[in-house]
Length: 568
Ligand code: GLC
Ligand code: CA
Image 1 (cartoon, helix red, strand yellow):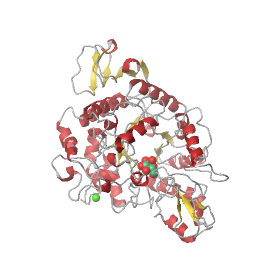
Image 2 (tube, rainbow, N blue to C red):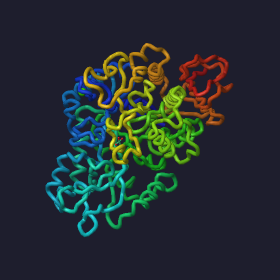
Image 3 (spheres, rainbow, N blue to C red):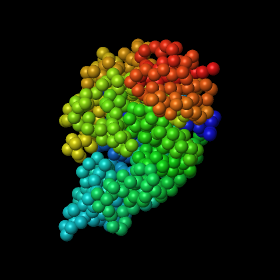
Image 4 (cartoon, rainbow, N blue to C red):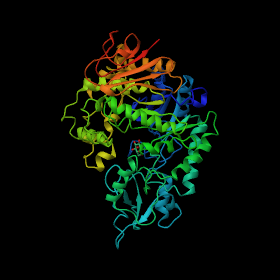
């Protein structure tokens, strides 16, 4: 396996901190987090010990999908700052050795994008329309959508052009997010221009949004929605992963990434990219190929129950996947699209989680009933979150940390309906609550206005009273806080993380997961409730524990606890 040796390999075992800019820090007090806010928090990021930050979109946007509706890929939203603010932020981060990754959203633009507006104006049959996916409607008046497909956020995935010409445009997500036609050379060229634009400004890499959906085949007879859903389910499971799908994970998408790789390699060190691809584990290595994007998110661990056996299976599968290329694995427990892991783990495990999406379904059910049935066990959730985090931080590969998880933040459930923003909530008529609960601005100071997030207007998503308990200034003073656990773990990890090797000692039996890393570094997790006697840990030095209790040198590992040990 490759070792972490040169600057070009910085990403292989990096800790990348995800910033959701609008909810991080609001410097000018208008209630919306901004780039100057991020710059003001550079000392915090430095003290946390992260190697890089990834910024969710900060581009001009009507915010119909939290910024993933991009109106201009090469500018900063005036609500958030300017390009000069971006440069200032980047240089402040670089000064303390933190790299910057930005989000590229290539599947769709915003309907405010100049090219979409041009397409509407230029009319049916025009060159301008070819950059997007327009089709005639069905029926004598063309007033029926071309297919009965649904959007990922609910509701139809076709909307009328709005200019009375019988044409409809395709949007996999919200109707404010028309999909690009990736067969069009203008689209390809424009994204190359965008990559170079940010590369030249000094970013170190990219997170690629919905990387598995860019190329589509809408020719011929299109399947009914019902059949498409069946096909999607089949394709997402191993064994059938090579089935051809008209919209998802088509082989030719890799040609685009090969052309991007040419751009990445023009920089020194080469730019990096990580794919957001919800594909079968068996297909992930295609996205992680060093001839393409180079790395792919593994969400499999996020879809596991809190369970040592599930974790071991998932880790083995993920490591096997990354060994098919010369990439490294990624680990993610939380991000801006899923319920925070401290809350996921506050719920009972789901039965029969062979089919991972069960966890997502269960989570949505709890969200819809506002966590009333069953009631969350917040203490257990945090205890398990700390143990799971410490377990993944010991693994070879890179870890993505989502803002606020280092404070142990739970999901915010009590957001009034009229304050919700996620299009999922509206498009499903509240059958799915959506993702606002993990996007509430984070608390910096328990006693300050807006918990120190911003000096004036209230945060754009309301911050509940209880958030103050998790404020940075509270946790800084508490040696056992989650913040201090992360800080210590990240510091230690820097010293310990060398070769990307892992050797199993115990593979999940009896709730125990135990692996060895080079140089006598060991990680042991007990996912069960009860303490377990473990001869394998007796006499070894404890480097760090996720538990609030001190660990005694009696060979016992408390329930729902992870420890890092040093032997010899
Ligand atoms: C990705 C993003 C998500 C967004 C969607 C559409 O899944 O992570 O936040 O809504 O793409 O861009
Ligand atoms: Ca602001």
